[in-house]
Each structure stands twice: as structure tokens, then as C-alpha cells.
Amino acid sequence: MRGSLVVLFTAVQMVGAPLYIHAQSPGAPQPHLEGDWVRVDPDGVNSFDGLSAVVPPAQLLPGVSAAAGRGGGRGRRGAPPTDPSAGPNPEGVPYIVVAQPCAGGGPGRSNGALLVNPDSGGVHFIEQKDEVIFAGERGGVRHIYLDGRVHPNPWTPTPAGHSVGHYDGNTLVAETIGFMPGGVPGGGVRSPQTRLVERFVMSPDGGRLTITYTWDDPKIYQKPHEYRYYFERAPKIESKAGKFSYALEEWCDAGDPIEQQPIVPPKQIIK
Amino acid sequence: MRRLSAHTYLIACLTVLPMSARLYPQEPSATPDISGFWELSFDSRSVPRASLLPTVTRARIDARAKKDAYAVRWCNLLGVPFVMDPGRPLDIRQGTSAIIIVPENSSAPRYLYTNRSAHISEDVFDPSTNGDSIAHWEGDTLVVDTVGFHGDRGITAIPGGGYRTDKSRLVERYRLLKEGSILSVTFTWTDPTVFRTPHSYEFRYQRLPATYEPRQWLSCDPFDQDRAKFLESPPAPSKSASRTVSKE
Image (cartoon, rainbow over all chains, first blue to last red; front, side, top):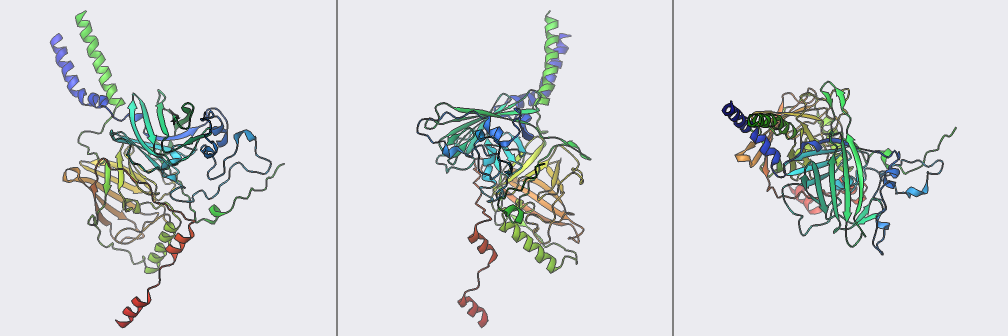
């Protein structure tokens, strides 16, 4: 009996070994993150500016101006940022305005910059052993390399910087440097030397994703600036194909006269 | 006790190993991985002339060309088939539910879904410049079927002649050649409003080093008036060139 158990156990090991080895190999992709996600508002703030407002304020070093950081928490596409503490807009001023949203195939769709600070557009992950692609419905792609490469030096700063990553258990950890100077949610600032660490943490059931952002730069911050964004799996669409989520394509035609019109707050009808 | 331990161990192994398999799925070993950075060279395209229907007149082709120029002028998403020959390398990554094709420009990436065998219903899917792509493996060949194209948006011109419409169907066959150093993609377009017979052509992409770093997109500013003038006003021939032509 014992002998047969050993034979059976050995057979099971032989059958199962390739998968198990694959599971344990360093850098092996965890399948859980792959798919389609949308950002959610767990605090019920109900507005893009409100989402930015719940980001804790960055603790900047004396002499570091937060002015450059304004707009890092951009929620309104193309609209100038507003002070979240200013309260509601005056009567007649809309909350959502669009100012040439598709202006600039480069900066407009931002080479992946929007994915450093995702808005309400859907986001998508594809996981492969050497690279995770982080793509956005509103355009742009980030490449997170898992193949052991180091950040290039020299590197010309870019809107989304240069990202390398690894898995810490079920969590994808991405480290990014080489950003173009700009703003960070919570009144923070970034420079090409600023380091961003993102931890993509899945809920146990795989249905929720929390991204923890930690910005660190000894020339800018008194202490690392940390905040979180929350996501849920994109809704699955009922179709003849079954129930699936998939990446949508956001169309934005800069040549459309409607997209080119100046911002004129529409007259409000208040009864 | 020892026998009980062996039983317990066996049960544990039988339980854990299948769980591992579920948690960490991988493609069957026979399935190739086309992931990598791929680039077309000057001799990478084998494109015959398409056989077009008589209804595809010069006037229709010119009207299409005008729309394509508009898409370039206004930095629109350019879509398939342009995205497969964008002038820069493609980053292709093979995930567990889809394969993504990422160009180095502002065109949207393509998603080739391997987790479903049917297209999203027409009444649900919004036509797009890339369409809805589903993929499966036939031996060493990845077969991709795409429908759901938008008839007007992006660059619609198809290599060899013709253009994509909302009735177009594209079948692609991806296959690694020369020990994985070449990726052959055969494109076959059918469209009852454009092609007399299915139109097929082949691109052969060369694999770039794994250490390749995708570059930033080149700027495309639709509100750059100098750029607009450049695109909309072809240069007049120089006087000397005109004289040369008139002599002939």
C-alpha cells in the first residue's frame, strides 16, 4: 500500500511539476491583475475634484513650491484645476467642461501620463513574464518591465517616466523615475529624479484593486507622499459571446467643430 | 500513524497541485509565445494588388483618401490596418486572456482576445478603428478574426488597394519563423462592398533585442497651424523642375 502511494505520489509530482515550477519561478506573472478596471469612489465624494481632495496633502520641504503641482490631480479633462476647498461652483458654472480634450496626439493622450494618475476612463492590464502593459481607454500605454532591466542612464524625462517592476506575492510593485517635471495629486511636485513606487494590490476575491502611490524625493518631500486609488473590475457586458468585459476605444476628433468650441458655460435652468 | 501521514501528504499534494494550476495558468507548452518587440524593414512586405469591385471607382477611392488625410491632419486614432505598419516597432505581449499589440504612436493598442470564441454582438459593440478581435491557436499559428470596424474613422486604406468599411472582416495568421526571429503575419481582408476576391498580403516582422526601449510618441498637435499648412498645401514644383518637365 505504501509502495503504491509512493508511486502515485511520484506520478502526481511528475504531472503537476511543470505547473508548480512555473508558479514558483521568479518574475512569473500573476494572472489576477490582467483585465479591465474602472476607478471607483469609495468615499462617496461624488466629483473628480472631490477625489483629488481626499488625497492627503504632500509635506513639501521649505522653499519647494507647490504651484507646479497644481493640476496633478486633474479630474476635469483639460479644465483648469480648482481649489477643492473653494466649495461648490457659483450658480450657472458647470462642473464638467471640455477644452480641446483631444488637443495634441502626444501630450493630449499623454504617452501614458494619464495612467500615472488615472481618471474615470477604463484601464487595462496585460501580464506577460517580461512586461506588464498598463493601457488606458483614453489612450496611452505604460510599459512596466519585469525582465530585470535597470532604468536607462542617461534617460530623457517623459510624461510617464521609466518603470520596472516585480511581483511581491500577489502584488505587482512598480518603480518609476525619469518623469518630466510636473504636479502630483495632493499638491505634490515631481522632477526627473523623483521616485514613484506603485503597489497594485488585489483583493482576495480578485474583484478590487488598490493602487498605493508613494512619491519620494529628498529634495522635494519632508517624508514620502502616499495615497491610494481604488478600482473595480469593469462591468461584464451581456452579449451573444457570453458575459465579457473588453477595452473600449474612446474617440476624440480634434477636427470636430464641437470639440473646438470655446468653453461657454451654458445657461442654467433653475426651477 | 506513518500511514496516515502518507495519506495526508498525498491528499495535500492532490489538493495543492491542481490549485496551483488554477492560480498560475500557463499556455499549453505547444503554444508559441509571440511576445516581443517587432519591426518591419524595407523588405518586410509582400503585398499584391487587390482585386476590387467595379463599384470601387476612382471617385470613391479619392474620397476615402481625403478622409484618411483628415485623420492624419487632426491626429485621430488611426486604427487597423495602419497600426500594423506604423513606421516604428510594435510591442506585442501575450497575456492569459488577451494579446496586446502596442504601437509607438497615439493609435489605440489592439487587444486580441483569447478568452472568448465569439465576437461581441453587433447590437452591443460600438464600431471602432481597431474592431473586435478574437484569437485562437491552430497548432503553431495564431488565428485572429476581426470585425466591428468603423467605416469612416482613422486611416482606412488597405495595403494593395481598397479600404476598410463597417462590413470588412480581417483574418490574420501569426506564425513564428526562423527560430522565433521572424514573425510572419498574413492578412486577409474580405468585404462584399470592396473586394472581388479575398485580399491577402504578408508582413514579416523582425524581432528586436529584448532590451529594446520603446520610444516616446512623436508629437501630433492638431492645432499647430504650421503643421496644418504643411499637410494641406503640397509644395509647388520649383521653376527649374517645371522647365525640365516642359522640355520633355
